[in-house]
Image 1 (spheres, rainbow, N blue to C red):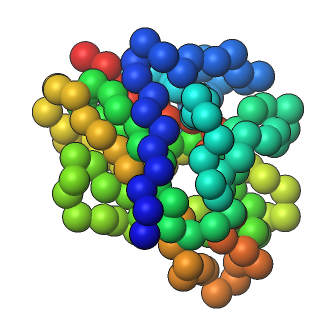
Image 2 (image 1 turned 180 degrees about the horizontal axis):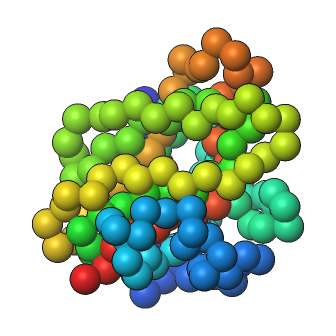
Length: 158
């Protein structure tokens, strides 16, 4: 498997979004993310298996094929992702700071894409971290695909 990265630094990769951070902050746990920072995935160059597209008039990073890894670098104590979930959504694996990979099934039984927040880790030391995400071949038996529609990374900056 080849690793392809999106290196989104805190000072780079900020883009305007159709929904405001105020609107989407209701999708995250306020206890773990009292002042969440939302970053749109905006790769500086194309990534094989991932493309910028739109869902609900918002620019998102759409992944269809298993294997390719995207990376997000941040400094904070907690991290999560906002994804559009529907009956075509798949399963991702994620790893923080080179630690073991964990699975997350983002499937929804709805045919319309619904924005959902997923906390990936809320017990991090307040330092720089690297989050890696990849789509896996395995899928929810009820899902019709393996698609991932990544709207934002979010983290708790302290």
